[in-house]
Image (cartoon, rainbow, N blue to C red; front, side):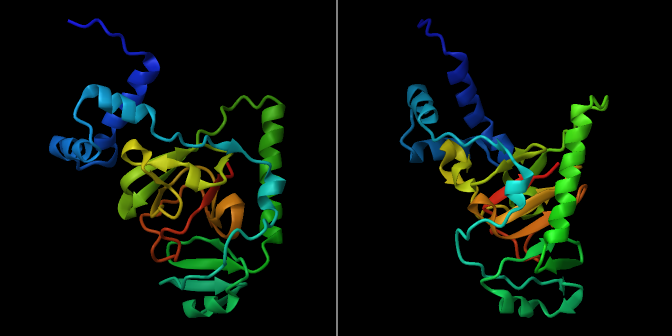
Length: 244
């Protein structure tokens, strides 16, 4: 019998793949075996080789609030999808189709279960977010005895919290979801893939383009979003900042 030893790193990579069927739910042993055969994998050695050569996801980064709140150069066109819910733009209720009049101009949305609030000027909102981040930093610096928030937001591939998912911790960000992979062998990325969100005790801001560009939508603390379809933000998110 072979006495081959698998390194901890190799073992962890294999375990991550084997966990995939549980991670997304609903897959059976035959599904996993069929997937392996499609990839030309029929031996344990081939499986290990495939897993170890799969692309690695970019790690989340810390965020300077001033940079994140500044308007980034446009990384792509700004086209507003009409939501299927009420829209209050700068304090006035509008027909959702009216948002097309603002194509080319980034808007900031605040999510609500029954309506979207949209702002053409988010200066005051950004000031409040910046002040809140400074207060949290001051509390940490002065030795606040309370533990820091563990507010990881959970993002899902499908509506109603279905499919694959990933986490992002408080006061961290992914500035480019094309570099964050998912699925077996990391064959896909998370750009324009998010369809539902699990609530956290943090404010989270999502952007339609990479590097915090284009329009954005804020989700308040402790807000579950079982579907982003009514808001017009389904499969639209390219970067995310967990404000904390």
